[in-house]
Image (cartoon, rainbow, N blue to C red; front, top):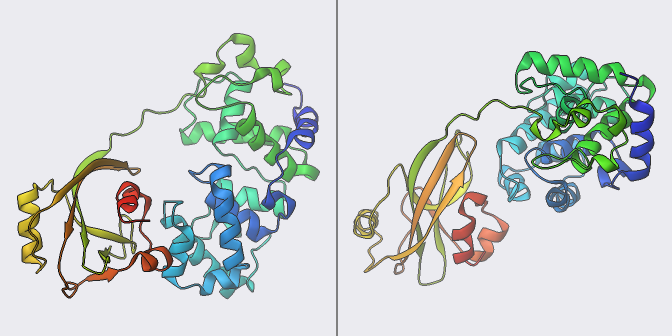
Length: 347
C-alpha cells in the first residue's frame, strides 16, 4: 500500500478540531486530556479539562492536591481510578523528574496509569518522538484500510497493526500523524455505524471500502458477562434537609468516594429497610419507594432499588455524616452511579 501520510496530513490540517490541548500541547496538557478522554467524549470532557487546569495548573499542584478536592474535580467523569493514578504519577514525576514529564517513551510508560497509547501520545505530540499512539480509533481505521478480519483486541494482532501504523509514519511529523489518525477515526471512520467514506482522504486506498466490508470491521472479542448485584439505596433526610452519607472503603469499586446509605448484594423490601434503619438508630414511620436504577461498571452491573425516608434530629451513626446540599456540591463526591438519586437530593 502506498504511504498514506501525505493525504492524511493534508486532510488533518484542513479539518482538525480546534482543541485546547492541541493549541497548547504541553506534556501535562496532553497527558491530562488523554486520561480524561478514556471512556469520555471530547465534548463532554472539555468543561472538566478547563476546570481541572484552572484548579491544578501544573504537575506539582496536582501532586499536592487533597484527595477530596481531587475527587470533586473529577466528579462526573467516572472511572475514579484514573485520577488517583494521575496523582500517583504526578508525585513520582515531582520526586524523580523535577515536576516535568520525561521526554522518554519508556519512562512515561512506567508511570502509573500510563499505557502504551498514552505514552505514545505524549511522546509524539509533546516531544516529537517517532513512536506509535494506537487507540481504538486507529485500530478501526487500519482494520478497514487493510480489510483485516482479525480480532483487534488480541495482543498479537495489535502488534501487527502497530507495525503497519509505523510503516506510514513520517518521523519528522509523528505527533501530527498520530493525531490525524485519531481524528480520522473520530470524525470520518466512525464506530457503531457507517463510515463517511465520501469525506475520507484514504477512500481510494481502503480495501474494506472496495470489498464492501467496512461495516463488519473491526472485529472484537465477545464481551465477558458482568456479575449482576442487587443494591438497596436509602436517601435518609433529617429535619434540616441534610442527607446521610457514608464513605466507601479506600480500595475496590468507587474507592474513597461518598454515597447514600446502602446495602450491596441485597434487594430489601420497605419493611426490611425500616428494620435496618431502626438498628442504626434511625427510626422512621415509612419509606417512600424510588425508581429502580441500573448502573453498569466494567465488570459489575448494579440493580438498585431505592427508598426515601425522613428522620428526626439524630447523631449520624458511626462511619456516616450528615451533609447539606451545599456540602455535597462543594465537598463530598458522589459518583455518577447515583445520578437519578442525586436529582432527588437536589443536586
